[in-house]
Length: 627
Ligand code: COA
Ligand code: AMP
Image (cartoon, rainbow, N blue to C red):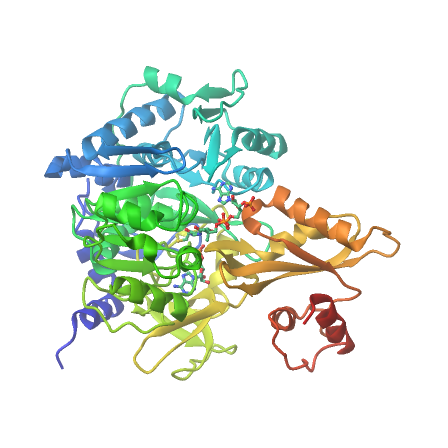
């Protein structure tokens, strides 16, 4: 039977992954072409193309200049919060990156060293990432919304030689000084970097510590450009920390070779992009979407990428996205559904689209959380364009399921994240590891080996990777998501099966928030879980049981706990509601019944679990929550 293009790719990748991906590797210019496909990696997972030699930053910049793109715009920095706009051609960006690589080299950074980047959405962040890659150093970007403690945890795990930061970030009209947060993190961290380099923004100047802190501009003025360092295909490019179920984040390790191949393949197959077109991922460089589709993917594919320092609303209004699309002739936009829920809330009729020429826009891509059917429909009604949900994770680095428009476009099915991307063999397993029937919900797993671009494992913790992802069902990668596949082969992702939650497209750990809440001297025990939120998808809610005789008024304590989580985890945690209860519902073996709590908080009427030690507790909690 004649196969469709998607079937052809999927089957070729499944039947002989090495052959398929070595063929795809031919898309790139290697300093030495690889002959080896996949094999076990030191960090616990799979590595690809270990005998090849390349450099991702060189592919993203120098190779594009050599291919005739010197004058093409590589990066557009659009910042409504500073009212500025700047364009970098491929030649200019290459020059800036080569010079900043010189700064890092002057500070002693060499291949394999880690560099932590704690910066806002400014071009210097992208330049810093690419400069690390150019030297074969390993960057670890920490999202600017995280608090000092979170930064300290990541610094202690990554043990960077240098930390790069800026004096401040801008959240709407608010200035968020970053340097005091960095100083506090370094006070808390055991590991101390040899130096920091601080980019002074005009909105706020950072106080510098002599000997340790260096001024970005002064360093740059002294530096000489350096050439890209060839590295093996499996050489680590970055460590990106993501929330797990405990307080300790997981350092996802990604390579140069497999990642470059996956980025190139996905820009074409998943996003249907042609070199020279404009791609906009409205995310943040601190998240995986920013790594893959603000920085590496579009540049490796010869596209123009947009770095947007603003919000979908309030900078200045809900027409901001339409303005950027029209002004920069964006061909494809990628963002999180929550961003469009925010736009829709403020401009339900899409009036602010008027006056913007959106004829350039071909497709909209959504990910980070499930694209809820009402938002899908709203976008469809407003734009009449393909509105494509796709599912992925920090761990995979690119889409596990998508509508592979570069190969063939399937009919859109609201609620579904699309079909398995070629290279990902998705199976739904039940608790016993048996395949679920079509339409039956279970744990979404991917048969090994994972394709190029996925994690090599966890930084310095191969055991945690094996235990967390590979041991539950031998031969499979456990995604941590629940879902099902329907009769057409479309994948539906219904939510996490663990304590990871998704707040406004940001991945957070309830376990981590519980650790912070439980650290308060008045708290005996607590449960933090996610409840549905019409704007952010989910928001956390906390229930606490106080120690006997703590004597503090409940409302005052709740306020203190909210402030504590904000201080320790960061504002993005969005834990705003905490209630004091007498007891928490538990199984007879002492496990907190989180699912039941979540259902109660969402106003559902959950069945009383047979394992509950005292069903009366549920009525009490219902009362406290006003349900
Ligand atoms: N640095 C410092 N603080 C930050 C920050 C950053 N980079 N990002 C967010 N914060 C702060 C916000 O200022 C806010 O603080 P507040 O409680 O004092 O107001 C808090 O963290 C929560 O931020 P957020 O969840 O972003 O809420 P918001 O009300 O400011 O905006 C949305 C709501 C929906 C507009 C916004 O979350 C959004 O654009 N989401 C899309 C997310 C996304 O792109 N995800 C990436 C996956 S594709
Ligand atoms: P992150 O690692 O931050 O990208 O978050 C990954 C998690 O976000 C996944 O495990 C899912 O729970 C969720 N997610 C991402 N994309 C989707 C999607 N398209 N549909 C449903 N959930 C998604």
